[in-house]
Length: 196
View 1 (cartoon, rainbow, N blue to C red):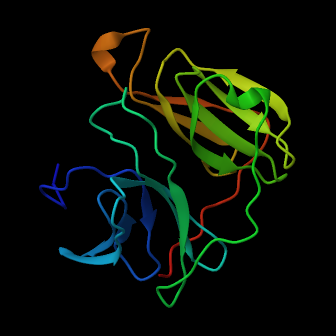
View 2 (cartoon, one colour; view 1 turned 180 degrees about the vertical axis):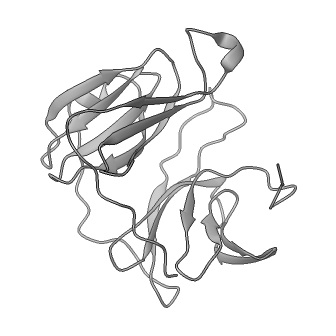
């Protein structure tokens, strides 16, 4: 095994880049290629950038965490979402809140889209992944035997495999984090490569 980015405190998300290398989140959003790191986004007061995802144009969306990650019992501070455009600037607009009973069990974390437009969201502390309609209505659920469900993604040759990533495993505590696999009878969308 080879360490590509030594001494980086944390990586919350990764996106492959069209012309090589990858974009990583953590204390900043940075592009790694052939051993070189180029910072794309930093913000005062952001403790970490976490999840990231690309859109069809190759723009990058990243979530920012302002809460104290070293003290999980400390007061929570709202973060924000940034979009990095192809020219390096940008903002997110036309936001809408998804809320309701689905968000009462656990903290929403990683998410992905299926081809029909439904959103799959993991819940840290909720021990599950929920399938939400575009309007936010819960239409499905997959129970997961862990407390810290952190990420979810579609993959496989037909995009019908669902991979669920966790930070613990209640069935076998020695395993700590695990990757679970299932086929939920829907297919996901391939993730576009980043162009930023």
